Length: 119
Image 1 (cartoon, rainbow, N blue to C red):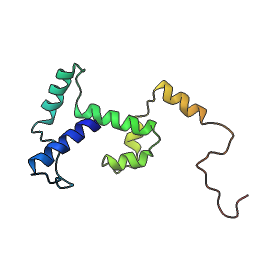
Image 2: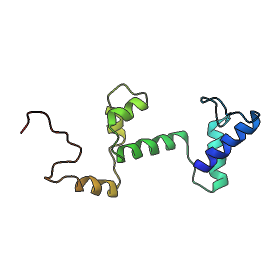
Image 3: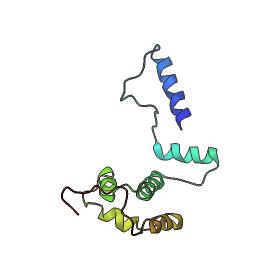
Image 4: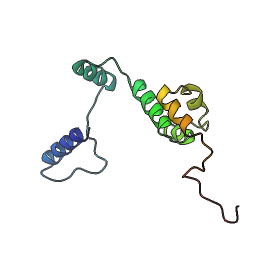
């Protein structure tokens, strides 16, 4: 992906007389996203994907990487504090489930910050 983005940026600089494009300039021009995704999948020999497929992948990956569900919900524009995310994406892959089970030890987690005056 990085190589593609660098190529697109170089093209934008070349088209802009050697000047860097604005920081909010678009890298891709797509008129019909659904058709673009379908065409790309066909060219690459992939199964059919949709924008919803990418959304599911993003949310599942974020959950598996430990991103807080409330944060994911906010990123998706939800106002329910993560309820829909938890209801919809409560499935986990076996490898992720095993990784989470290994976290359940009696040791103090490394991300716990002791409070002043606590024993």
